[in-house]
Image 1 (cartoon, protein in one colour):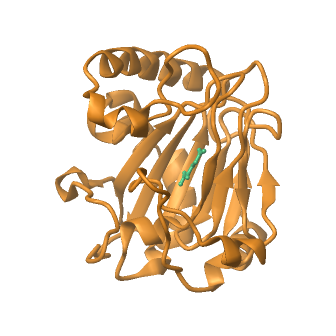
Image 2 (tube, rainbow, N blue to C red):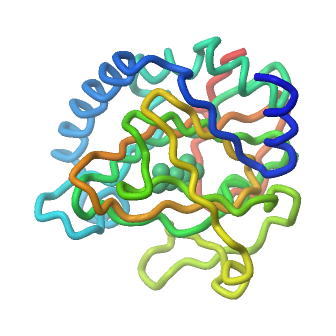
Length: 245
Ligand SMILES: O=C(O)CCC(=O)C(=O)O
C-alpha cells in the first residue's frame, strides 16, 4: 500500500484494495462456510432465527450471517493471520493486532436484505476509536446490483452517535434517521478476493441483493494492541479475541 492509500483511508475512513487474495482461495473459504452454515441452521434455536435468517424476499430459508468464524473455522483463522492482509491492517492501526469479532455475511441472490447504516464503534465501544479497522473480504464480486457496501465519506473524523434499534430487533442498531439524512453514502464495489477496509467510526450500510448472484463476505474486525472495550452495545465474548500479530 502506498502513502496515497494510507492518506485516503485517514481522510475518507475507508479504502478498497482489489486483488489481495486470488479467486480460488475465496472459493475454498466459501465451500467451508457453506458446510458450517448448513449445520448451524439445523441447530439454530427458534428465538435466534430473526437475527440469523435473511429477512429478504427469498423463498428459501437462508442464513443472513454467522458470527465469529475466526474462532470456529481454520480456513477463516488462516485469512486473519495472512500477511497479505496483515500488512494492510497494520498500516492503518499499527503493528500488534487482534481479531475482536468476525462475521460472515451471506446476502443471498434475489432478495438478500439490506443492512442499515451503523458505526462499528457504537457496537464495540472501544477505549481508542482509532484502533479499530474492519477488513471486509469479498468472497464474491460485490456490485451495486447485489448489495455492495456504502460509506459515509469522512465520518471517521466525526463522533460516534447513539444508535436506535427498531421494535423487536434489539440487535439491529442503526444511526438515527435525521443524522443519516444529512450524510451522502457512496457505493464501494469490490471484486472477489479484494478487501474493503473501514474505520470503526465510519458510517456504512449495504443494499439489497437484486441480482441472481451471491454477495458473500467475511468481515474481520481488527483491533490494536492494548485497546479495551468497556462500553459495548451488545454482548461480545472477550475470550474469542484472537491475537494475530
Ligand atoms: O456486509 C454487510 O452487508 C454489512 C457489513 C458490515 O456491517 C461490517 O462489515 O461491519
